[in-house]
Structure formats: structure tokens, C-alpha cells
Length: 204
Length: 204
Image 1 (tube, each protein chain N blue to C red):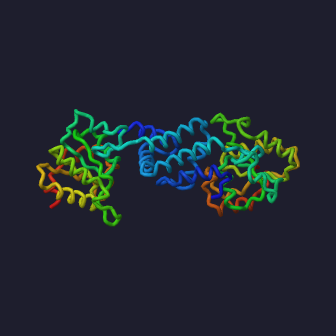
Image 2 (cartoon, each protein chain N blue to C red):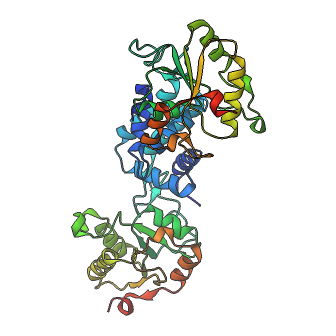
Image 3 (tube, one colour):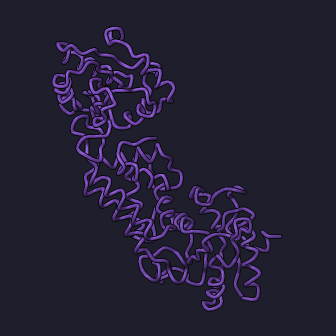
């Protein structure tokens, strides 16, 4: 696709780098922006750049945060002795929207997946184990996507903390095997949290 | 959807303004950018803002351009006495990719559509008429989307220039009625240009 302007070409190339955005869609987005006010488009660009530059990760749970500690970890109304283990930030957002979890989170940053070269050391597992030890966590709730990688991760972490007096549960698998957690409807996700099971019962 | 950071919330809100991008997709894009380097994301934002700020429209044909006159109007190898009338810049790009049009373009910026409040004065029609008069244009090729609005626009412009010795044609309608020009495959579009018809034959 030959574009009549190098400025346009550059902007389309930038949008095309985003996941799920092809050249035609990128062009459509750029031409839409071209119809907006200069100040609005500048604001768009600055907001995105500022977000990346200034965003922080909670030092305790690795969730996205505006400060050193995220609003969930800083909230004394929440059960600070319950940790829900999730793969990524999208999962935190999905679970928060159900309003069913009274505890805190721990974002692993992925799941153990040897085929993709992701081992325990690439994930925030050691910091989780340290947290459980130090904070005398009473319950660990796994909310990982129901697939082999998720189960491997549960198994690995469970072994690591077997000596600690912490109850280990996993959200009920109402979600189809191989499904993506973030696309579950809120009702299914709500029930999965309410009906969480001891891991022994799940991983036989 | 409650997000854990106002920076994230703002970035998602900006992406959600784009056409066809919902909140979930916006979040996916923002989280993708969050994984990129700070400099890369800054470059993304700056490229978009710069595109909007610095881009120009060709003073002759209203096509997007890096300078005052676009590369097509400035190209002496092209037939400067043939004008292809299109609705928007996407259509210029689509036709250019067929390499079948030897002439120049005129971008109307839309079509006459009273229901949407778009009359002839909101479009670049007067500048087209002036151009045809001044440049002694020999052929005017309409390449508008084949629907009521497109036909109305052809009819209106044709009336306006009826007194001028300019041949008026339209690209062959191999494209389905109600279809979008920009999504036509290159072969169909190529043939439509090669088999263009006198307007009298088309608008009975």
C-alpha cells in the first residue's frame, strides 16, 4: 500500500505494530485522527507516552499502580491475609469487576511454560513465597487460566509453600478448559470465586 | 470496568475514542504498549501527534501531502488534464494501488447527503469546477461509491460543468450496489477504471 505522505506512512506503521491491527485498520484509525483537532491528537499522543513513562508497579503485588503501593494493597478494608494469584493485570481487572474477592492480589506476570522459555525465575514467584512467609497469609487463591501451564504453575507454587500453614484454593473451574480467563462473563467468574476448592481436591 | 491506575484509565479512554475500538480492545492495546520500552512508546505518541500537526492537504486536489502540492499533482508524467473525482483519501490510495489511472485526483471530502446535513458547499466541489475551467480539463472520471449519495453527487457536478467541453465518465460498476469502494479487490477496481463509461450511458 503506497501512501501519499511519509507522515501518514509513519503513523500507519506505528499503529500497525499494535496487536490485531493490520495496515487497513491502522490507516482507518490514522485518517480518523486526521479529522480531529490538532490539540486533541497531541493530547492522545501525550497521554499514551505519559502512561508508559509514569506508570508504576505495586512493590507488594506487582499490580499496576499510580504509586509505590497499589490501591488494593493500601486498602485496610480488604483481607490482607488472603492473596489471589493471577497471571496478569487484565485478570485483576476482570476479578475486581465481580466484587467477589475481599483479599489482595499477586500478579505473576505469566505462567510456567517451558516451551515458551518461561520458567519460575521469570515470574514473580519468589516474591510471592516471601510474601506468604512474611505476611502470615491465611489463604492463597489461584485464579489462573485453566490449562496445562496454569496447572503446572499451581503445582509448582503449592510445592514451594507446602511447609507453610496457608490454605491453598483455586477458583472453581466453571470456565471451559483452554478458555481465556479475561473473557469469562462476570457471573461465571463470580461463582468460580465463591465456590473455590482446596487444591488437593482439584489436582489429584 | 474499574482500572487500578488513573494513567491507565486515561490511556484506555483515549484509545476507546477511536472507531471500532471498544474498552476491552483499548485495554489490550494499552497493556501491549506497557510492555514496550519507554522510548518506543514516546516515539509512538510523537509520531501520531506530529502526523496531525504537520500534514498538509494539496492545494490543488485536497489529497494528503507532505508539501503544498502533492506528489501526484507535481508529477509531469501524469495526465494533468484528467481528473479522477473521489470521496476521500482512502479511495485515492485504493486507486493508486491499481496503477491504472494516469491522471490526477480531486478529493471531495465526502458526497452530497442531505440526511447527514452534507450539501455541495461542505464539499470541495466549487474548487473542482474552478479547476476544470482553468486547467481546461479533458476528462473527468467519477470514482465514487455506487450508492444514492454517490449518484446524486455525480448528477450535481455534471450539471455544474455541462457547459464545459469536458468528457465526463464514471468507473464501470463492477462493484456491488451499496458496497464500499475501498474494500474492492484490485482486479475489480482495475477493470472498473479500464471500462469507464460516459455518464449519459449510466445515469439515464
